Length: 133
Image (cartoon, rainbow, N blue to C red; front, side):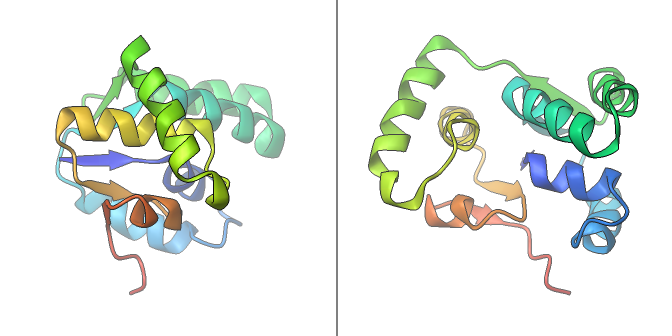
């Protein structure tokens, strides 16, 4: 099972993103369905809106929700409380609440691997898909 983080989606959708080539190469090879969260879709919508316009952002996030390849999971109250613990644990690394919710959800669901360009997932003990090639 693979969890996809905001940065990976952003890299796929924004051609001038520094990781666009890697994201375009890796996305088609991901085992389906892959997982993300409602917090990631929120963060993605906001960032895409600022970068590429809000209509484009709405279309891309809608694509996630209707795709049979992506399972957008909703966090629970317990996930969000656990995320606060993750934030405290890694306060010195300045990890976002969205990432901490992702960690809590991944831990709860037994997802050990993330497609991300964010080193914080590795710092938190998760495997990340190698994007160096």
